[in-house]
Image (cartoon, rainbow, N blue to C red; front, side, top):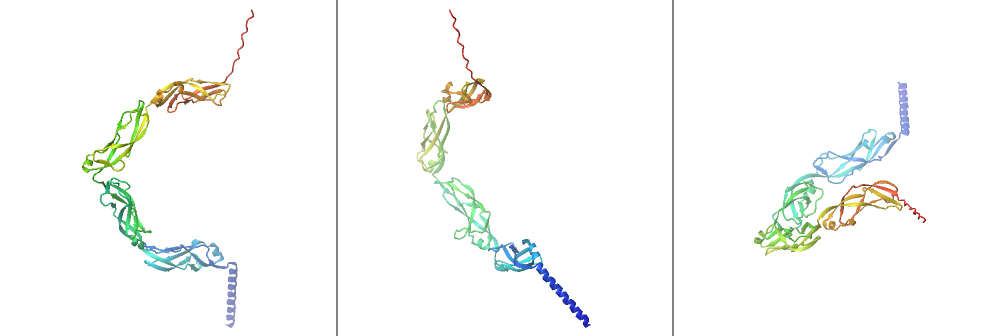
Length: 414
C-alpha cells in the first residue's frame, strides 16, 4: 500500500511539473499583455426615459486597460468592446454613475476603465403653450394709423425643451415693421422666446416657429390718397410721337378739410405740360391743380417725364455692290451687281437720307483670284438700321487685272 501511495505521489509530482513547464513554455511563446487598449471605446447611454434629457456634457468615449494574450491582443478591435452607463430608474437631478464595460472575448480581462465614474445631470423635457406678443418697430406713414391691436394666428404657440430653459421663457415676441404700409396687411413673422428681462432664451424649440400677424391700418379723417394725372398740351413736332409719360410720385396724399377731401375724385391733375413741337424727351417738375382748401402732404410738386421719339418708317434702295480691300493688280465683279436694301429708322432721318449716304460693299481683303460667296455689308448714317438685304449673299469673282498696251498705228508715207 505504501508502495502504491509512493508511486502515486511521484506520478502527481511529475504531472504537476509537466504542466508547470508547459505553462512556462506557453508564456514564453504567447506572453500575456497588460496595457491600455490603443482605441477609445464609445460610451453608450442605456435605459434613458423618453421624457428625460442629459443636460450636461459627458464623455463620448472611454479608455480601457485590458489583459490578453499576445495572439488575442493582435486580433482585437474596437468592435469587440462595449462601454456604457445605465440610467434605469434615474430621474431629474445629478447622478454619479459607474461606467461599465465588457469584451466579447471571454479570455480578455478588463482591468481598468477611465473615467470609471461619470457625473450626469438629468432634466425633464416639458412642453407648454405660451402667448405671442406682437411688437411693431415703426409707425405708418403720416395720415395713417394702426386701427386696433395687431393679431397673431395662432395666438399661442408650444414651447418645448429642458424644464430649466422652458421655465425661463416669459413670452414669445413677434417683431415686424409696417414699412410705409397704407393699408391693412398680413405677414409671417419669426418668433423669439425671451425671458422676463427681454433676453432671448436659447435651447428651446418653438412650434410653429412663425405666426401670421394681421395689422389693421386705416387712413385718418382729412387725408386721402389720389393718383396723379399728367395734363399735356400741344403736339410733338412733325415726324415725332409721345412714346411714354411717367410721373413721380404717381400717388400723393392729400390733406384738408374732411368735407372737401371726401369730394375729391380718385385723382388730381398736374398743371398743363407743354409739348408743342417737342423733338426730344424731357423731365420737368410741375405743381398739382388742387381744389381750394386742399394741399399735398410733403413736397408740393411732382416730376413729370415725357419721352418723345421719332416716328419710324421704312424705304427700299437699289444699290450697286462695291469692293473693299482689293489688292493692287486685282479687280472684281459681283453677281448680281445691284442689291435691294430695306432700311428702317426715324422718319425725319429717312426723309433726309441721300442715295450717296448708303454704300453696299463686300470685303475681299486678302482674297486671290477665284469665285467666292460673300455677304455684303451696308454702311449707313447713325440712327438708321438695315432690315434686310436681297439677296443677302452675292457671288464675287476676283481676277488679276491685266493692262493691254495699245500698238501705235503707223502713219502712212506720202
